[in-house]
Length: 213
Image (cartoon, rainbow, N blue to C red):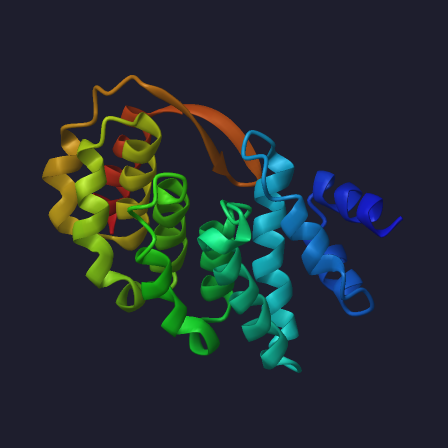
């Protein structure tokens, strides 16, 4: 029943309801993590966001639980977990974003996984999500993100272009300009929905953001 309730709340984007449910249902973290694997489904991305929001509230009374969840996600990334942690970088990014003081030390650990092929996109997403809240946590990762603008995988180019716009990295403008005519399409999650976007569209939005800021 609880799993069905969680899915219904995610479908309706009722994140406040998920936070309230977490007060009485500790299994909610396990449920949300289990729903985070299908990245072609917006429910999975909403589940990741929800974990961050719930940990923000949880940390007010039980910061140790939040750190335990972080430890579990880091374990899931590692080989001994059997590769079930492919969404862990994104979830960890949401946790750091929502708990900057408690979890700032986790940011460099997330970045350290960028060379793992199955985790690269998630790391880039996490960097952007953290960077827009606190650039200082992630400034050192800018050269890593810039390197992905030339990656043969359009998903990684797109995520890198978006991330640089979120971080506010003015020195990336010239490199982003080179992607304006990149018409490769990827699924991109934004404002609670998954949409098809070209790499060029994402780069153009980041450029506009950097110029206007």
